[in-house]
Length: 186
Figure 1: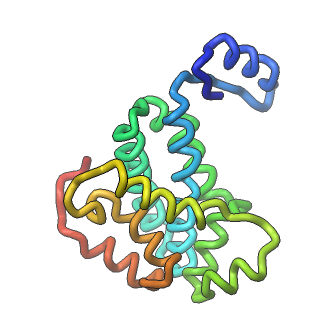
Figure 2: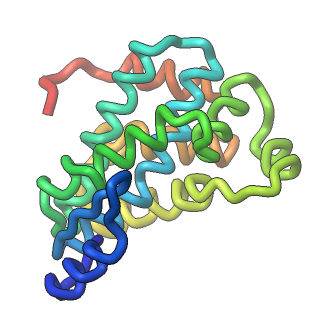
């Protein structure tokens, strides 16, 4: 639970927690918002890994690097690394990327298997938030980060947007990730 009012957050936590569901709270509203939005974009990418048949190791590597991109964006917007590394960041990302019921992951799986985004959206009665969020996140990054070559700083987020816009196929996007210049892990 994110709130600028810790007492209110703690009260909601008490109300919502149970033996099978535990709530934590933070004042880092930005970190929770960024983590909750970007996880859906990363889940689309993870689904594409599955749809392309790349295996668990490739998916785990992609999700891990996606968490790094989430952290980079959240910190640039004033969030705390603790929030992004916690349940509302990494924890929620793992659930969305690896959970079989994730709508965003399913969109990625279907893209990886060769369906078009138009076909997927036309045949679904559920909303995969990551589709619209992907384009919004790229615009947010462009507005708030004046670095050169943002595509190298956020290759997964930019790559998913390109795939959703139809300027790259899932296979081309993942090949672009694998052929990026080697560097120190951050």
